[in-house]
Image (cartoon, rainbow, N blue to C red):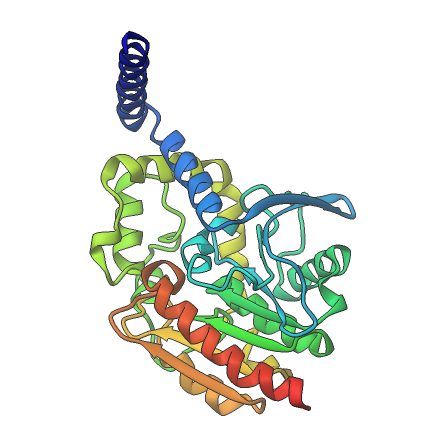
Length: 329
C-alpha cells in the first residue's frame, strides 16, 4: 500500500508540475500552446504528418486512410495564411475509412516555396498538380475541396485538369468578383489593405471578428498573441506579397467556371463578411457542370472551423449523391 501511495503522490506531483508548466507557457510562450493543440488535433483526427519532395520543394501534408476504387480520395486545400491542420475539426466528422489528404500550400505551414515564385493561381495549381502526381492521387477518383483562397485554387485546378477531378467542393472561393462588396473589401478600399495579415493582437482580434460569425470562437488575447507569433510574423512579407497577387487576380476564377466538368458543390456561410455571398449568383450564371449550392445559417467565412459537423454532413451528402451516379455509369 505504501508503494501505491508513493506512486499516487508522484503522479499527483507530475500533474501539478504539468499544469504549472502549461500556465507558465500560456503567459510567456503562447505560441507553444498553439503548437501543442495543433498537434493534438492532428492526433484526434487520426491523421499522420508526411513530407514529400516535389522537384526542389518539400511539401508537408496530413493523410488518413487508404485510396479506394469505390470512393474518391479527398484532397483538402486550406485558405490564405492558414495551414493543413485547419481542417482537423471537420475531418473528425468524416468517416475514418475515407482516404483524405490535407496539404500545406507553398509558403504556408511546413511547405517551402521558391524565391520569387510565380503566385498566379494557374502557377500554384500547376505546382499542386505536380504534388498530386508524385503522391499518386491521380491514379484514382479524386474529390478536390478548398476553402477561401484554397477554394479558388481548387476551382482553377478542376478547370485546368478536368480529367483528374471527379468531384469539386468550394467553400467561399476567391477569384470571383461579387456584385456587392463585402466588409473586408470595403475596408481595403478605405486603406486597410492587409486586414487579413495581422501583426498585432488587436489586428488579429479585428480579423477574427470579421471572419467568425460565432464570436465565442475568438481566442483570448493571450492565444491571439500566440497566433500572431506562430502563424503570422514568420511569414508576413510573403503573405503580403501573396495577398497583393490575390487582389490582382480578383476575378481569375470566373472565366474558368465554364471549363469545370466535375459535379460541383458550393458552400457559403450566410453571414460571410470576407467574400460576399453574391458570388453564388455569379457561379450559378457561369457554371455548366452539375451544381449543388448549400448555404449554412449562423456561419461566417471560416466554414470548416465554425460548423465542422454541418460542413462534413453536407460534403458527405454531396459525395453520396454524385459519386454513386458516377459509379453506376
